[in-house]
Length: 233
Image 1: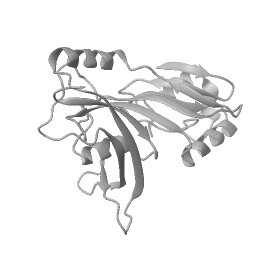
Image 2 (image 1 turned 60 degrees about the vertical axis):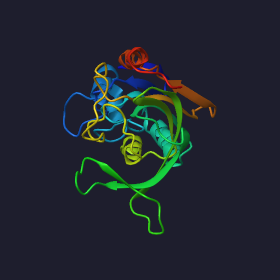
Image 3 (image 1 turned 180 degrees about the vertical axis):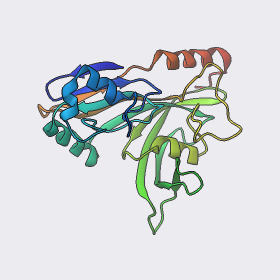
Image 4 (image 1 turned 90 degrees about the vertical axis):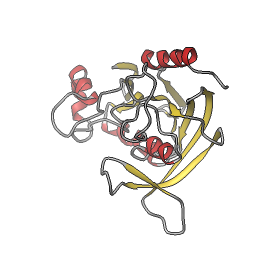
């Protein structure tokens, strides 16, 4: 866990993969680690989220914001609710998505077959679930994989993972959403999804951007693909 930035209002943290942002019961989580370092965070918001402004899936790494007082928490959460926050991710998917740049729109509901999963429902006259909007751009492709830059227009649970799987291109290493016959490169030991940056209005009313570099283990995967797969773009 790395604190990238902090002031009297809030902090930006680079969350490692494999760590839950919070847990309903006592245990190791991002918030429990932060409270050990900054005990006053336990007075912000309600347990077990405390000052957590938004969330990331356990196996997703990258930028997450934590407020240091109740007023700051409300200020930041309001921007997420109004969808004025720009969230940029990097994700490795199976095969090549067509078109190479575009927008995915659907509704998301809990899957009746597996309550852990979200199910994408096509847009129609009778909305079911919650609207989810995702923009993507292909950065690089190999024989069997593609690296995407992904922008979230909404912030639904498992949004990126569920929608890309729905389109036939799950995130590589995503054991919950990838297909049965899919297996990632041997050099990958986790899900390849990283929250690279967040831009929003800070407390001085200026736009502030927080960035987290791609983790070394994911950089190593890209280098591995360059050596073992044909680069198509």
